[in-house]
Amino acid sequence: MYEHVVWPHQFDPKTSAIYALNDIDVNATPEAVWKLLVDAEHWSSYFPAEDQVKILSGELELALGTKYSRVTVGFPMHLIVTECVPARRLAWSTLVDGDETDSSAYHGWVITPTDTGCHLLSEETQQGPFFLEELGRKNPGALYRYHQEWVESLARGAEAEVA
Image (cartoon, rainbow, N blue to C red; front, top):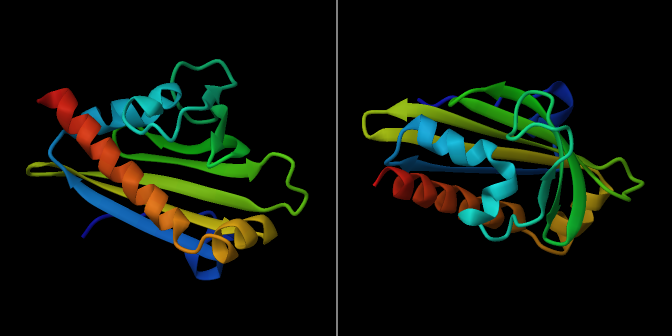
């Protein structure tokens, strides 16, 4: 059985309005996946949709406490890394810029070594009126579809690195 995200109380999937789980087996080492995942300003090298990411706190890659911004599907956001276990776990909390409803999200990644490489799991929960409107009502299923494309692209990128 694979591990899952360790949820802060306020982001627990059981009490969140929106939740997505995506996973994939990757024929690459956890370290190859990790290298691409923490290189946030270059996510677009394997996942073109993430082409507006900027680390704000001075690090070269994501680490515990890193603050960064990104524009995802047209919405500017500010994020902070809340969990970072190299080659195993990464998570961040998100606030949408300009949103006055205090809507928030929490996205975690878990990398589990396997005999053929690793298993990559992505989970996200979203709460608040902004996300309910934009993803719940206007675009149901969008979070799942976006993350599925992301995990598949990350897997292909990592596999290409070790080929």
